[in-house]
Structure formats: structure tokens, C-alpha cells
Amino acid sequence: MKLVVLSILLALAAADRARFDNYRVYSVSIENQEHLRTLKSVNKGLNGYDFLTEPRIVGSVADIIVAPHLQEDFESLTKDNGLKVELVTADLQKMIDRERPAENINRASEDFDVNAYHSTEEINEWLYYLAEEYPEVQVIRGGSTYEGRDIIGININRGGDENPGIFIEANIHAREWITSGSTVWMIKKLLTATDEEPGYKDLADNINWYIFPVVNVDGYEYSRNVYRMWRKTRSRQGFICHGVDPNRNWDSSWQAGGVGASDNMCDLDFGGPNAFSEIETRTLSEYILSIQDKLNLYISFHSAAELLLFPWGHTADPVQGYDDFFEVAQTTVTALEATHGTVYQFGSINQAIYPATGGSIDWTFLRMGILSYCYEFRSRNTATGERYGFLAPPEEIQPNSEEVLDSLVAMVAKTRELGHM
Image (cartoon, rainbow, N blue to C red; front, side, top):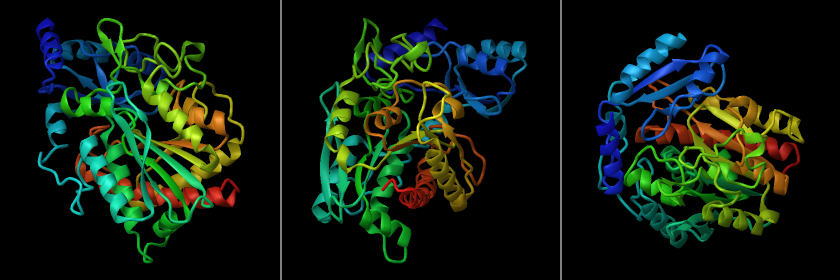
């Protein structure tokens, strides 16, 4: 076991791309509260377990990653706790390899491939290209990162500031590549929508969009080039740990009650030493407040659990205006299912997935009072049932994007009907 962990640490230190050969993934049925507590309490991190699909609530399924040195421990864990498991893959590395079928990907040009995963640099070059090609497009800077990068986005504005505004934040969790991949796909569809696509055309013509494909730039690049499972930012924490979970770092019930985020700086869901400790969340929040008078709706893209979430994360108490949140969500997931048959559940963060504090959509509603939603994209191929969690192969970008964009058409229509834009 020590040799396995040492090899991973040495690879990370040398900035080589870590490999996950013979790591197994099992789906685990969560049939009762004891099962849920067991999965939530397993040792996680470089020396422990990880999840492709996290344990949420009783009745759901978690996809757990088991390193070779943990196989015997996992078998004891399942036997001792009566867990029902099914092998998803015997080699996690093969799933990861599917994400990059070719290293030579078209960059900032009219041939840019929106059905592939790109580096932040490639995405940004494409955004600047779009600004040259489309008069309604402007490149915007939403903030900066610990390693000195810019958080770059795009403003699509065909009708002026009279149009209602929607803000989209993607890839705040570094390893959730399908979020930026789908955001890029949807940007192109909005800009090229024709009269034969009236729903998309309406979104393009009558909404003022602020879209950021990659918010956690440092973490995303680290997940691409060094450690595929990286989730956090890359700030230095203590002597041996790096990063803060940027979706536990916003100033909204930050670390409230000791639940919903970790105070252990090495954990994946570490909330940080204080709210807005991360330059990424702090500068992005400042940008959001600078345009708050233009915004009517805030949307955060995550993966993967087939969920549409709304505030609150820190409490089970209903959010103010719960009925409107509920009605919009219900309409949205119904439209999403109609596209490819993907079934989403919906509800508050606290009740539908798990308690969570310091999240972006809680903060945007708290500070601005606008409808704020978080998508947890599909965790499996709807047509075949293949499970992949946040390791979605590139062929999943288009179907995921199609169903999400169709659902946004319905979300906007219902939001208008209820008077929120």
C-alpha cells in the first residue's frame, strides 16, 4: 500500500499525469441510513476511496472508486455492512482514456470541435474568435486565480440591456469536465440557432447571457495534466495540502453548524480557512455584484447525479419563494426528460442531495434574491445505461447539451410566466 501511495505522490510532485490502472469502480445501492453513513465515513483522498457519483440519500446509488491496495478492505466493508455492489469497470484508466480520443484537437477557428474536451487556453482562444465573428459577442473577465490566470467568459447580447440576464457558471469543480464541454456546445448552438429552432432562437435573441465555461481554471488544468480526480482550487493549505472546494467557499452560511463542508484542509470538500478565502470565488463574486442589476437568473453546472437543485444547502427549511422555485424546477426537468428520456429529480440542495454550505447558488439568492439553480448532469448514458459519473466520454457532450438546452427553454418560459424576468 505504501508503495502505491508513494508512486502517486511522486507523480503529482513531478507533475506527471497520474494513472489509475486497475482501479475498480463499483455501484453501491444505498438501501438505508446505515449504508449511507458507511459510505460517507470511508477514508477519502490520495490514500483512500473516491466517488464517481457521490453517496446522497437513501434510495440512490453511489459509484465508488477502489484502488488496488484497497480491494481487500472494500470486500470486508461490503460484507460487514451488507452492501449490494455491482462492478462498473475493472480498470478506471480505460474510462479516463476515452475522454481524449485524440490529443490534436482543432483550436480557435471555425472548425473548433465542440464535441471534445479542450484546455482552458483553447476555449478562451475560441471565445475571442467568436467575439471577432459575431457583433453581439463580447469576451468578459470574471476574475482571476491563485496561479495568476484569468477567468474568461462570454457575453451574448443581441437586444441590449433591456433583455433579462442569465449567468452560467461551469466547471467550478475541476474534475467535472462535462460542464465546460456542454457549456461550449450550448454557446455555439445559441449563436447559430435558426428560425427552424424557435426555442433556441428566442434564448439567443431575447436573453442577455453571461457564460463562464471554466471558473476553476487552475484546478481544471491540474485535472487535465496531472491528477484527473482533482476537484478543488490549487491554493496552498498548510504544509502538505492544496486547494479549497470552491463551491463550499462562498459567503452563504459558510461552515454553518459544522455540516455540509469539511474543516480538514486535505479533504475534497474543505470549505477554506474563511469565506471567500479563494481568489476565484472572491473575484467572481465581485464581478457578479457589478452586474447584479442585469441578472434575473443564476445557473451553476455540475456533474453527475441527474438533479436540479435550488437553495438552501445549509438547512431543510424552505427557501423564501419556494413555490416558484419548485414550479420552475418541475417544468424544467419535465422538458429535459422529453429530449432523450433522462430523468432528473429536483428539490433543495439540503433535501435532494445532501447538506452543503458555502455554495454559489445559495449566495446569489441570498445577495440578489434571484432564482438560482444548480444542474447535476447525467451520470450515465441514458440510452445504454452505461455508468460513468463525472468521467463522461466526449460522445456524451451533445446529448447532455441538447437536453439541458431544451430544459433551459422551458425554464425561461416558466420564469417569464411567473414574473421573474
